[in-house]
Image 1: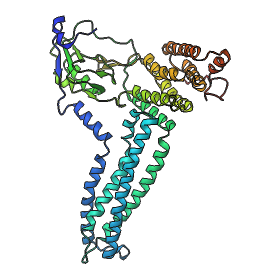
Image 2: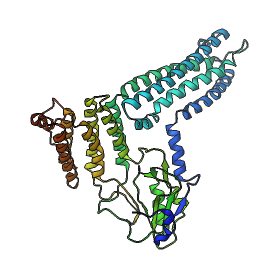
Image 3: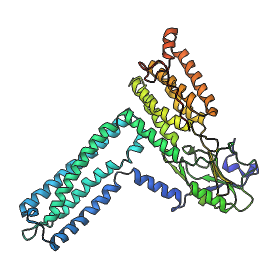
Length: 450
């Protein structure tokens, strides 16, 4: 058990440094970037500012060139058309906002509140809002230039074209979200995001799991505030450790909650350690987990969707079976990878400079299976699909990962023994089935060569 920072010196350890995040540090920039990526106001604001600027450009262009006669408008026609565009954009913008609120309510109830963090980042949604607001301010700015003496013919034509583009974007937006907000589509999108994060991570060369040195650290960096570890600056930590010839250890995994005053980083070395505030600025804390460096967060979202479908209020085990398909694909990707060197960051000479706590295969598999097994033990199609998933993993994953799969299979048998008393029904619920109920009577035992 670790000593509390306040009593660290009493245990013969160096006094901890309660560090704050420098304003322009990597962590501060990461937090600002996260807020911008998840914001629904930034892109519309830029487009709202760009609208009047483009209107001035169109007015100047109209004065400099003679537009074709086919683009000519009378004063009344231009005013009526621009006024109609303004009204239409106001109405469509309000509809999109109302639709967004409805989506948030539906997704929170039927999917998972954690999924909304990904939904807010959708580029198409920001593009639609930006197009509507930009067209609105563009048309408003043109209205003031309409007079008996001059009509911005080019600007009015551009406004009409912008409306057409906005309507097309609106239709694409509706079609996309009507289809992509289905639980199965969300599950596969989340699984794909988790796979991208896992594949982009530098897991280090294979080898025995590393442990921090046995001695006491020369510097202990504690967090002055509580938060979830959202991401770390791997390159920055490596550069700092190499420069000061030390070993930096983070005893927490990305996604863990760090209470205020807790150890965040430990520095081992005989020389002068890096500045505590500089190291603190390389670890981003926030209110909730992000998916940037945390593939387990994608798995958490998938499990949330599945167990929500298995709740008595919803009672939709077929959705859980569909989610298990996405989970299986993500688990196969992780289980077929060598995770023995994960958490070690090495410099150009191969020296380990940074050690970050990472999740083991056993932890990830338990995350994916435990709650679905507990809540779905009474659903025959869920247990059959779960067994098919585990038997597939038992064939495909690396040999060192297979004991954990065997433990999950034994746990599934135990859960079935408790939940289903009738031997015949239990035997039927224990058969592997890729479709839950109605699939082939065996699991395809395919092996993919590396």
